[in-house]
Image (cartoon, rainbow, N blue to C red; front, top):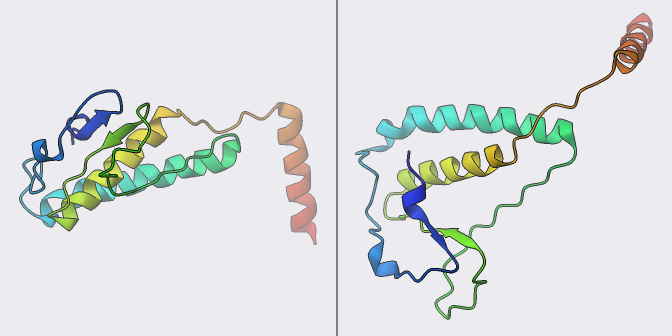
Length: 129
């Protein structure tokens, strides 16, 4: 699913009229995006485990309505998400979340051989009791 077509940058002018609220990127029903949603959930879960294990990355996603007064920061990028079809909005939200998480390129921490041996020793002591 191409999420770039929904992205706008704070430095460019855009009009909400230019975005079709009925857009579904060619998908015709919730069933047609079901596999994509399921796959995204699996990938997000895996990435979330890496974020947690790494302990260095925190990701805050804010969903908000567009500020009609134009007070939002000019340096941010935004995604204008079509909202007429709830199933498509949810699918595109997951795609954006997955994209943002991948941008951080999280990795599981690398442990040294000494740390591995200490973990094994602790595991042995716990299982003895």
